[in-house]
Image 1 (cartoon, rainbow, N blue to C red):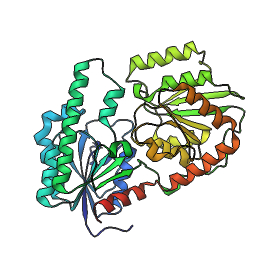
Image 2 (tube, rainbow, N blue to C red):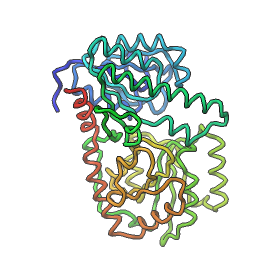
Image 3 (spheres, rainbow, N blue to C red):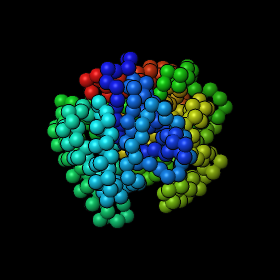
Length: 391
């Protein structure tokens, strides 16, 4: 699609680092979306909280035609509530400067005000809902039950305001998976799959599991709702016909108690020489680790539509994932991967054995997964957003 007849789009969401020279940096998952919009519009008006220091994963330089309007600094949903007025004012500035509005993300303060401004200015709005905070609260219960209850009440209230706001502004929802879409039913609700893929991110191979050691990979932020303990349990139950290596990639420094639990399981299963921790993987290193491995597994307990499942299939990896959240909207069981019940190590063990030992089926998943990923590029995602904005 070529540049639209509208000149400016306001993008509200994400987080930004602005260096002393004024250059803007974002996490790649958000930055590539912003960049894709910048190719369709004369100007992107980006309204986000600003980081005062550049985190290691905020390294994606945004294009020159992105104008930045900073929200008051906030780090958590509850923290944002004390900045409600300032956030609302930043919304007003961004929306006033734009022709259309795209919102990325879940609970933030001033949601009602955001939609009211769009309605008052007759600005088309499309809201991308990327996760299910209510399910996240259920799957990862806080040690303080009062915090969990307050969190659920906040999300419940936010969902009501969001639905009312969409109706007021005649906006559209695009949702990461059917589970999220079902929470926001309307004639302008559409299911999408998260992606950052461009045409040059694909890698073709007919088969994996051809080397002396089979490498099984999971790559995620290591936290309780990712279900890594069930992967370790399944791995211990699986009788592999060749030596294997289990590679766990992702940051693991925030949830100390959970990491201790995983370390204990690795010791109990005598996996010290089998499990390999890779730590945080920079975005430009993701293709190399995907192409190094033979099977991708995501044993998560709660999820939207994880980009990594798209990236794995684009790099010709057969995948096993849990049948939760938006994953069934991304992966078709028995066609381009295997879906299993969450917290079920027996099913996971069986799936691992099937993928590793059935060559014909593995090749079928690789081929079909690659074809699925071809339809899940960031440009096609932007096309869907613009269609919802009637552009």
